[in-house]
Image (cartoon, rainbow, N blue to C red):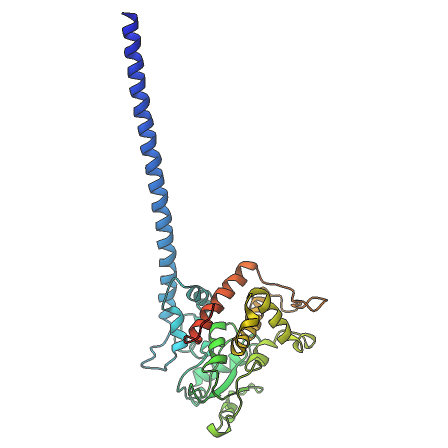
Length: 309
């Protein structure tokens, strides 16, 4: 009788142990499912966050059909998950503010068929451009191009994506740039010349002198091209194999990018060149990786018909 009861207890205990193991297994499986669901939800939320930023930015961009056409402004926002969009969102959002119209001119790179006389006839834009010109960290660039029909373009140095487009819109076209050296915006028309006078081809000094030099001492200005090339070589392994127009883009964009980082970090007086002439990085590694990924995407976008690894 005792043996029978003992065997029954053992059977009962075994059954309970199996039920407990099954319950634990089910709970563990459920936990794994919940963790997976949470990760998916977090990923969707991240995408949604970028989409929201994208929409907020889009609300501040004038309708190209009713105002002006500016494809380079809209293209970075097509894919809300792209690195370009993330960088654009972080870069543009603090600049745009709430006013759509008065904030438009200062951060525009290339505005096709833009009429520069608007800047001198509309007092709101006139005052905004004058203030923009007087801001040491936001140099105003006036340029003209055959192929893109640009009469004038004003943009802050922080818009690196648009800077690259501005430097490399149809690289074989003839291009000329003029920097305003007088704060009076009324003199803007003196820089808009006849098409026949536009006779300067793109090279590595286009725009870079006006944008990159500002904030650096004279000692470093003479060697900036070499330094940016060294930086490009260190972050892009196949830089030496690039065609010359890629190298122009990389050096110009790298210089503007580093200037932006120095401005944001308030390291305007910091050296970017070491004692031995090698570049001294003031840029976090993660940011430089994002920059390289962004630059790769931009080169592919600017030169879609060519192979770029």
